[in-house]
Length: 551
Image (cartoon, rainbow, N blue to C red; front, top):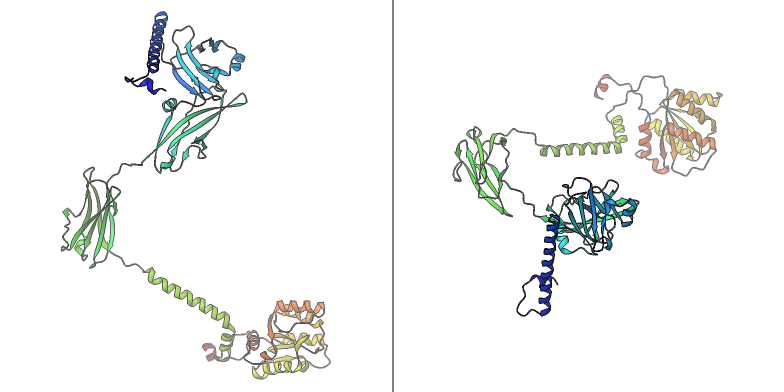
């Protein structure tokens, strides 16, 4: 509807359009005439009113310019009547839904009845400042375009949108800000950690205020423009570092790269002292030049080449120069020194790994074969553990205890014969070495006293010694700290009396256990004989000085 009024009318314009144009011109002339008459009568030239638009229900804040000092009068001018709010009581103002506080005039919730012209002026003064308020469901595009706030940020940088602040009376409390974009809630609260092009657009912020237990809102439009991040780029040498010392080997070829980044027509050169280094590859020292262009950025590289490093080369300083047209030239100076030999950790690593592997394998072998190793040293090399000189008469006391799954008489006899005749142990046997007529308990304790080790052998049938002797032996072993070996069988044990089982458990904890597996244990190479011999004390031999030195 506005476009025909703005444009020129052609010869083919309708009479209706011509009449409308004529009416508009006449209205403008009448307004100008009224303003002239008003100025002539009052001597005041009215200023153009500041336009304000608001949606129904939003809060509106009008602020009188600072040139109006004190005793301000606020007026609301309608075609029917002019209201001077400064003369109204708080109750009347509350009924109108407005609040007057000095140079600030607040409409808490704008409605159609609040449309019109508003003025502020000093009391008893002729000057006025005018506002025109329009209340529409949607703000006009022209108003939004003229009153939006613009924020510019750069791609991949942090960005904070600020909701415009409004000066309100102190009794109106600010209650937070919410953001929306394209009618959807914006959870980032106006903050972008790294803004992108897709974040560009129109944002609406809503300020909330509390007054009289009610919440009132004001909305503002903020336009975010996301622009390319164009830093001012400088030409610079990125490597090597200035005054860097490089290690080299005499007589070997060395290549030192000087790298630079620039956007202009710059050049990269090498100097030896005050003389420039040539690009001639036939010289002992020369340099090669290459460049690469990526996204309007030039990456330059000048490689200084020493065919064979000499003592003479070590005495000179070498300078890489970035010759720039847009800024002062950049210089980086380096020196060479003979490379000091350092331990090769790469070659040392396999040795360390090898040592660790050998140690682990050795430990595993020892754990698995420690009994065989110990018996080998005893039997083959004639090495024996030194045992303190004592008054013991026997190497071991073999005591039998009743067990339904124990050794029979033949197996027990074989056990005694092998230990004495095959391996040479001196054994104390109850039925052979105890004198007749002596009390059983006393005789058994005497055997324990005279023996270096006690070996408990399960037998069937009952040897007739009584289960009470086991408890006595346990006490004697603890008191005398005599070594104990408990022989068990792999057959399922039939439960015996509670006291006997409990005593056997104590004895098992106090000593070591060796398992008799029937026929498989009869072989002298079986694990039973290895374990039994390993736990038995070494035979008491008188070692000569020569043997002692060998072992």
